Image (cartoon, rainbow, N blue to C red; front, top):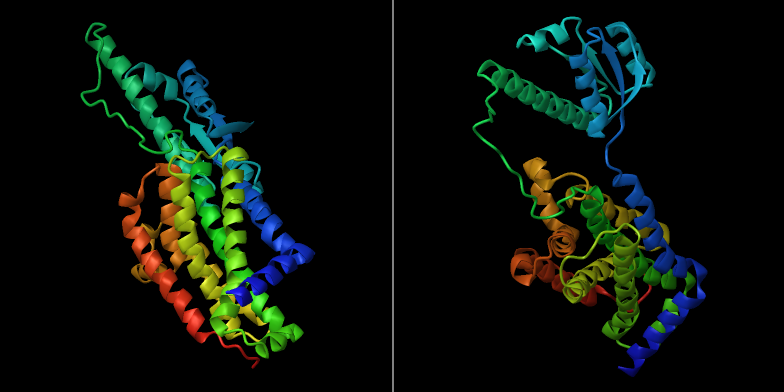
Length: 375
């Protein structure tokens, strides 16, 4: 135990005295969360819209106002023809356009039907899908209100209502803030990246500098050496859990709905597995560049297959089941469950036990394979 504590003290001193390691430990997680948080959590709104109003009636103006009031669109150009709309979209000045035909007002006032053409730049599917949904919703709501108004006039001013009044209740994230979805996921991914790199680099660096040879000739056992190197990074990683969650809460305004002690406890289980992976990477790496390449084979799939970028339910079956091989997949669901939903261990258990099994297996495997030698 005394030998292991000596190694731990040595690692902590190195972290404090080495500016590069200190930056990787403290600054990098906060910077990554801040930069990625602003990059991926921006809500899609104020989509540039060009308008062609050939009707120039009260009804057409009221319909155009709906686009502006919605907040999804920003009317940045008025055109005179379909050709001008297409030119504006081609040049990138606008992303969408709406053309209201000449007889729109007359048809609406007489209870008829009038087509409205909507144009969308589909080069960016994310913006295009949001614009399509918003345009369809605006059109449907306007049609319902006009239909009810015309029907009420025909039956003598009776207050007519649609037979079904669908009411939606959001159980979590009622304001539909993208921040509340993305920030917990980014916390999980950033902890995965940092814990992998810290451990892998720490051991490989010893091998490159030749200081591992000095440890080999000592009576220290392999498991004492490995734990002495890993445990300081466990403490550092838990500090980063506090830092990243704190940035999410106080900078991005994402509240933690669940138990913070539970979040730290389950984070510890996840970190043991991630740090164990880092040790496994160091066992098969001869230099830091090689360790970086090998770690990339884990980190890049983690972005895609864990469900951070794309909902896993929408993935092909091979990608979907491949995600179960990554511990961050389980941890991401756990973090979102605690921070966003506020659920407890009972509801998180289907995600906790596979992550715990993986972490324990990887940790003990790394202990077994860790060799007190220089290749």
